[in-house]
Length: 244
Image 1 (tube, rainbow, N blue to C red):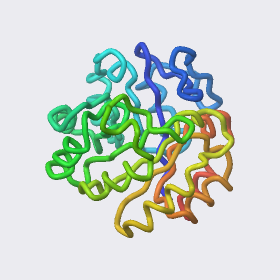
Image 2 (cartoon, rainbow, N blue to C red; image 1 turned 180 degrees about the horizontal axis):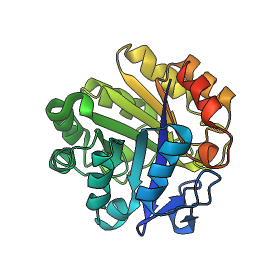
Image 3 (cartoon, rainbow, N blue to C red; image 1 turned 120 degrees about the vertical axis):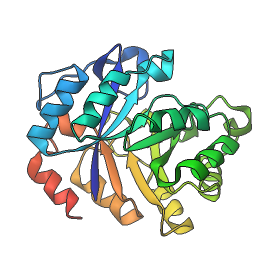
């Protein structure tokens, strides 16, 4: 089971995400590092926990179109595997991010213009593309008219049928709560649709049991943040998770 550390960046600092209420996000307080500058924090997390995979939600890009490109470049040079959500709206946006040599680019339901654009991106980028099924309290998190009235399962199946082979299932309302993801059933349905798809799950993971439950449902990776910074998942626990 792969462990991917989630990093939310807002106003150039790492912040603690809580329930997707972005206006209330505050600078991260961590038992792992005292840094809040993204580069220093990620380097110290790698040193302390042995993590090299980082899911970066660049809220400066998502909310204001201001990408932290120098950060991406610095991390790539250090060998960090970046899964980058920078608010991409279409295939062209995603291709641009790929030109920065990040590990994978994320098309989030929150910002992608259409399933059609997602299909173009899947054709162009293949396994370098991750589709993030963004939800809040189980409801699709999107303003796109063609998507807003659909169920998460319906959108997920459309994405898989469009050629997506890396899927991230995320309920933003659960982020930072440590109470579980409540997405096990969606993970199981995605796995039932495809044995080959790589499934990531996150938002609310707070215990080893949460991880094993997602593994049983069919997840390949967990995306975690608070459980790392509050000390719940220390280096030894991460080794156990990686061995699942």
